[in-house]
Image (cartoon, rainbow over all chains, first blue to last red; front, side, top):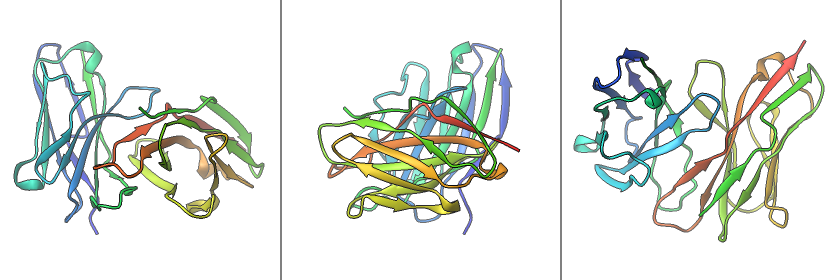
Amino acid sequence: EAGVAQSPRYKIIEKRQSVAFWCNPISGHATLYWYQQILGQGPKLLIQFQNNGVVDDSQLPKDRFSAERLKGVDSTLKIQPAKLEDSAVYLCASSSGSSSGGDTQYFGPGTRLTVL
Amino acid sequence: AQSVTQLDSQVPVFEEAPVELRCNYSSSVSVYLFWYVQYPNQGLQLLLKYLSGSTLVKGINGFEAEFNKSQTSFHLRKPSVHISDTAEYFCAVSEAKTSYDKVIFGPGTSLSVIP
């Protein structure tokens, strides 16, 4: 079974530029998550999709971050314009989305973003 | 809202010695609890989780954790560590019986195994 795929693995941009990350979850997984992991901290949820609908985006800085999950499969996360404090690893995860809860999340390798 | 505390940011331990990584949570409702491990330059992977039932949970790579409701803790243990256990360990919590899983991660504990 293929895991969660993310691209690119690394990205370096200047502040005020835009950047986009792509995620392809495990086939059949209904729930998709984007996390921001700043060095030395735990992952922080940015946005959570159930199929192609958003169930939680309370910590997404909506003035600069956007995300979509077309057709309930792969997803893109965009930052426009980037700030220095956006330097972090962006993790994508997916889970089966069972109604009973407590699902295991499967993580991709992440995209390391450096904003100069 | 739930939260997770991992009091030890770094834990050095000699190879073949036992280790305990501490995790405490706060929540006003029933919870699910998780331990994830992140090896260098890799994504996170599940070590073990507690959903219900037996409070002692066994996971991969010889790790186990015990859920203690009265102390709101979910400490991770291994009786004998290997060099390959060097990694970042994250405790996480989500509230049970909600419409969707919202998982909150702790800040992580860096385990360094010394040869």
